[in-house]
Amino acid sequence: MPFAVVQTGGKQHRVEPGQIIEVEKLAADEGATIELTEVLLVSDDAGIRQGNPWVEGTKVVATVLKQTRARKIIVFKYKPKTRYRKKSGHRQWITRVQVQDIVTA
Image (cartoon, rainbow, N blue to C red; front, side, top):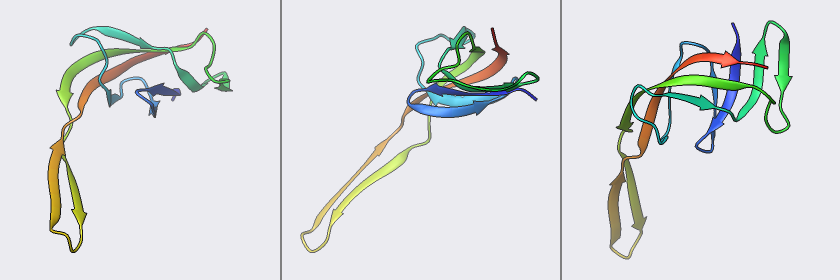
């Protein structure tokens, strides 16, 4: 089974064709096809190729399924003995994509 390691949004993801992943928000509409060109490593029948920093001529083609927000995280600041408590929350925008193909040169 071929796989690749791509970098997007400052994070690295191991992807395979048909897999659904959630990444940091990408500027694309739902149903659009995107290309992830920052491929760090690719493994297929020809073997394993590692980039320096990217693998030349390799890209991951994916389809945007949904633009949504992640689960809420709670940010709680507390200092003992001073009655200081501050609670807030944050929901990060994410893009859910389905990997269609790993294209190599």
